[in-house]
Length: 309
Image (cartoon, rainbow, N blue to C red; front, side):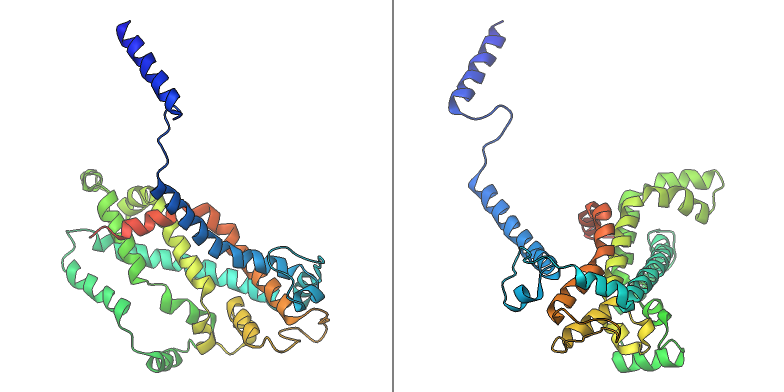
């Protein structure tokens, strides 16, 4: 009874201080951190909101520089123009198709390299790890690379955007570190005693336990390929093989032309600025559909990469 009375007295004292039960006092440092994170988040969200408002505003409001974060004179005609024109629609479908193939092949190649290198029983794994890390810091240069792709007959094909980049030393390092730190050796030893092969261990034990790192690398590969356009600018000349990001890049460079990227049958009733904003929003849709589902693994993947292997 005496202990209960003492606890009641302490609760009364806390209530008099005005501090809620089970809640710690908010420090000034916490407020500053939250304020900094909030401002940093706004710097990422504000341009996106500005483009969205501009893409559905009237031409007069955009030309008068009156549109900031709220649309004025709602106008969806530019989105209709994008779908009717067909060029961006084709580039969108083609880019999604290429990104899916690139991501799947990248995960396969990365897994095949990271799993053996994570095992101490692999002879010469230090040497192989060093060889795989060299491309991360050094490259042959643009001209020798171009001549190599020309000799391999990869120029002006979809595969020139896929094969050279499916192996990423950084992604391999992250996956190798995950295997070393998160998959117990005792599981594999037990499987070996039961007669399992390396491939059976990989597909039946390791990969089912590695969903988080697979989701992380899936995001890395997909976002990286989707946002890249420099290699397509160097190696692709056929318009039907150009990804959507390259079309957007050309559109920004040709902003002064009122008929930028529009076909002859399309009516250029809106300013190029509205067309650019609508095209960027159109190209952002696939990433917006994927990113929320795997974003929670992003930080975990970066932290795993910090574990030494």
